[in-house]
Length: 202
Image (cartoon, rainbow, N blue to C red; front, side, top):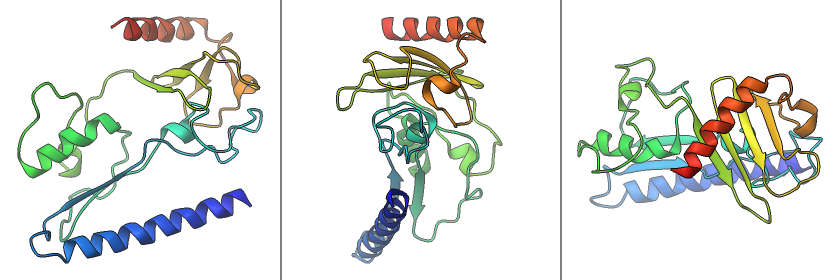
């Protein structure tokens, strides 16, 4: 089935990345290389059964598609905290790497270094209250604001199973119109929409 094939692909990528790291670090002068593994999207894996065409990626801005791995590795390196539980952002990758190698932040760069978390010097890093996620892929156009408890989504191209606007609780299990709580929390919807409007204007 699709899920089994997906797990097989994950295993293949894992094996290929491991072989690549071994070959690079075996080269003279490359022993001290930092490796970063990230992804630009996750996969739906048919988590949203009420939303046709949500099996794969790029067609929703729900959590299974928005949450991705972020792995940092250097041969012989043992970070104080090997797993970071706090959700972080891809925009934080570059500042973190620059901090780890000791060069300091790039002028005008966005993002926050996660080095304090990795070093065990902090239990949390202060991140912005909201994050914006968007996609335009295969005829879709979606944008979302993620807050602590909810995410507000605008589906700007009609798609079966989802309304034009939706408010979904954080924690996954989004299922389009079936789990839309916009009418139940109008104040939350309005607040997140205002933030999105201001963000797009900026």
